[in-house]
Length: 408
Image (cartoon, rainbow, N blue to C red; front, side):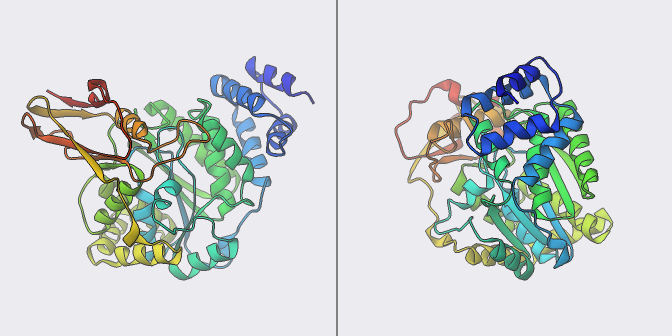
């Protein structure tokens, strides 16, 4: 086979066979195909799409690139959750302890940030000492004993997706529905859960920009799940506005702790919905009863206790968690009502501070970010502090940087 012929075939909108996809993607993993040619194919896929048959083929190739776990043989009520990426989305840090408190087993393989969206692994790595590279045995043991473990993709679990994920992040190919579907489901299937909830974020701060694409992705995820005999459910949620008041890695860890203490905010509401769905799927429970149970473990402190146990089990030292020392308040230039807080604009400002990667070899500053003081609908006065910027390096700001907050 010839890589140029395959790129040209997809550029012309034709379907690729299983063997052609295997040749290119495994060739890239084995360093036989260079970045620039793989990037060209990814761009052709992003522009021209893939059929369901191609997507199932690619998912299978991803899965077969590494090991496959089967947690259901050794424990009951195994669940998994994935978010397609958003701004201020630290739900995993909250729903993991909640699930564990409810007798579920959440085996969570997470990724790093993709584009401007924050990655769960980046967030927990802001906690000094936190080990995201636990072994398969440690992963199994912790999920079985504690109910929740969080790991980055190991070298042996879907290594092909890990390599492609990093390349997509810096080549403008993050928004392809087939690539998103293959990436998500290969990890979920390989990680071994039989009940999988996918939270599809839609809006300016998400990979998926409109509801029609979200519905299409939902159908594809469920179809892939059916092909592998997995119970898959999706929820579609808004990401025009950040999910959390905090945007930035260590700041989002702090906000997750606040929610586990009972702070009411959109992040709290989202976590209740996710956990209720997982509980109803795994234990065949009515969703309204599951919602009550989910709130109980926050109110009685059980989820917060599980969070501390989880961080300690993976060697994290929460007492050493830091946020940037330089805090710059941003004041309203006029009074009025907050009409918008654009998630994409907020993410761009956080990226400007160093909170996410713009290039493959960039270093993330875990301590920087934004802390919003307002929400849509709030009435404010001129000179009220609408957000605080946490920063470590000199940054030149313009009014355009703050236009993501609308005041009328």
